[in-house]
Image 1 (tube, rainbow, N blue to C red):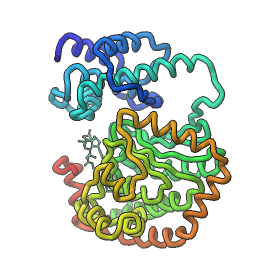
Image 2 (cartoon, protein in one colour):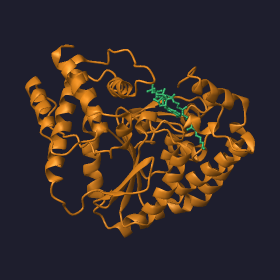
Image 3 (cartoon, rainbow, N blue to C red):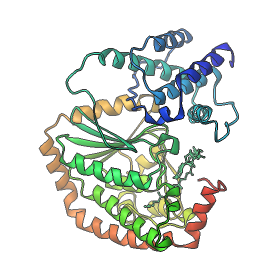
Image 4 (tube, rainbow, N blue to C red):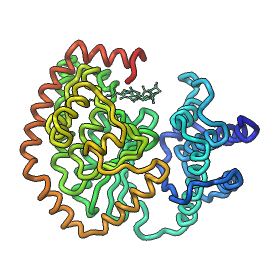
Length: 396
Ligand SMILES: CCCC/C=C/CC(=O)SCCNC(=O)CCNC(=O)[C@H](O)C(C)(C)COP(=O)(O)OP(=O)(O)OC[C@H]1O[C@@H](n2cnc3c(N)ncnc32)[C@H](O)[C@@H]1OP(=O)(O)O
């Protein structure tokens, strides 16, 4: 079905996505997907395409890319174009958005497109009036989008083109965002990812900014940062919820053992390839994972790098509940909005009653894991794994 409609969408998107800078800089929009019956017709798709032209508010380049990808998938099926070159940034962003949909069926893509446009139309209508409780974006973050609304502070990892890999700046900003959220008046705090990934773990290019003191100093700085980062999750005083919108890797997975609820899209996967990277478990996973899933399942994941589907992770207790990707955002946010209406002081007390007796133990595990991984950062296996990734010879 690669006909005129497909070419039209490509042209439409070319004019919509003006510069790669805008792709990263536009504030991300919440993608509430309607739970309407999964039966959008071709006519519905055509109507939705026309509706996009009538939007009062520019939805931002992230959303335009999503619309582009869904339209291509709905009309042409899985991505059938060669990957554009590294310098062709706009076409590469579009290719990545389409390719990320994998083998999503055409009817589902059509339905998702229609649902997305309908959610944009309603948010565009209501955005013309300033309503109480509207999203309040916290300024000052470069790698995150932090908002507070309806008793929920949402910390969204916002490096979608790097699969939300955690750069040094992002580690520092998450520590700051958690500190601020622990003191604000929201009832619950949510961590999620922008784009098709939840998070691809530690940014492997972090190692390239080696200080004057050389790699030993780099390893020490990384270890201190890791320890402080994990400590800010251990100490977080109110319910902390992970909304795992897509694949999670490395430290993004291990930390889940410190969350109070983990909701996952059925597109999410959970992968801790530490041995492949010459690393050792962190994020208190050497303690939390055996407790959550038993030592043998924990060993399969942490030592042998077994990747789990969302349903497997749920069966093993790492994930609380799995939702179909098409209705994930709508179902999860409806549920969280209801939870956040409960008395916030009681939620805080309840979390602390459940978690506090473990805190001291978790801190000592964190210190121990951090000191072990410091040696691993300097190991030949770890350095080779990073160099292989950076020179594009290896991927997970
Ligand atoms: C300081 C504390 C240290 C704590 C230690 C923590 C341990 C860990 O977290 S271990 C896990 C580390 N993560 C990885 O090893 C993941 C590496 N990435 C990949 O294998 C793949 O990128 C992927 C499987 C996550 C995704 O593959 P896919 O084909 O879908 O997308 P790509 O084209 O590869 O990705 C797009 C773009 O993003 C870059 N990127 C993705 N993940 C990372 C990362 N973790 N670090 C640095 N860069 C990453 C990727 O290179 C691509 O860049 P280009 O467009 O320039 O090619």
